[in-house]
Image 1 (cartoon, rainbow, N blue to C red):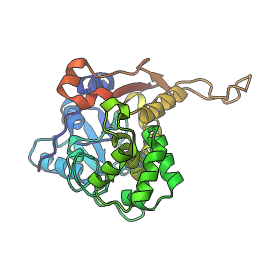
Image 2: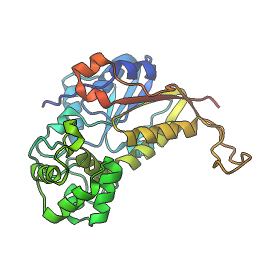
Image 3: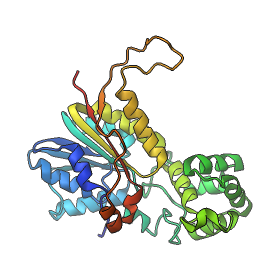
Image 4: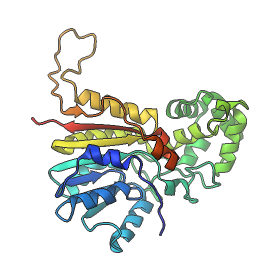
Amino acid sequence: MDYRHEPVMLKEVMDFLRVQSGDTVVDCTLGGGGYTNVISQTVGDSGTVLAIDADEMAIRNAEFKIQNSELGQNIILAHDNFRNLKKIIEKNQLQEIRAIVFDCGLSSAQLQDRTRGFSFELDAPLNMSFGIHPPAGEAGHIATEDIINKWQLEKLKEIIRNYGEERFAGRIASAIVRNRLFFRTKELANAIRAAVPNNYERGRIDPATRTFQALRIATNDELASLQEGLAAAVDALAAGGRVVVVSFHSLEDRIVKQLFKREASACVCPPEVLQCVCNHQPRLKILTKKVVAATAAEIARNPRARSAKLRAAEKLNF
């Protein structure tokens, strides 16, 4: 079993998490186990790491590595979506959680998986689900093929524009509706490329990039999942505990920034309210006044780090 993935900003993540021996820590996005492995070594035999992933491939890979002593025996695996963080923590009877980390990016292994269509560079089935075999009716999952082949033009245009931040959303959605049915990534990517001007972004990115991002976000309900998971993380942290989030596009980063700002504020009343009536108590101290980016050296070594944005906060004492 081979699951290759280099964790982004590992040093910065560990510096902000401030994990110590004996701590209980949650890695909400196990992936290839990069963060989980270092956290497991840091907390030692007296500590615990809960590692969560919706992707069965990531869980199977970690199980194999634990069995072969490539990952620590202090790791608890949970095959679930981190939007269910509260339930997962309760099920595993964890207390005094000192640190929680989210890595919102796709893993290299997912991009290279020929059974799913995350990458337009491979010819794969149009399945962008994080779960290989998601249960029927699973919350937060819509079949990618249904979005592409069944959704009405306006709804398709809306998700491409909003989730992909694509200025040619109308032209791309019209091309998809006009040429469907689609079942493979290559045929969809080619239809997208044909729908946009020849000088699209002056060659900086492939014209299919933002539409594929939008379809993946819609398939997995990623933004709502992040909002729910991050809110649950703030609730779950012990006083003085820390939460770190690494995101890869502006939609995710905006959610993190706004939630941190709200939880760090003494008042969340609307601007038109002249006197505070909310009695909101701040629960977080923001540790990153500005978003933290990867170093030039890391980007040269791992190009996917170039779009990474790190934010961190600490749970206040009450």
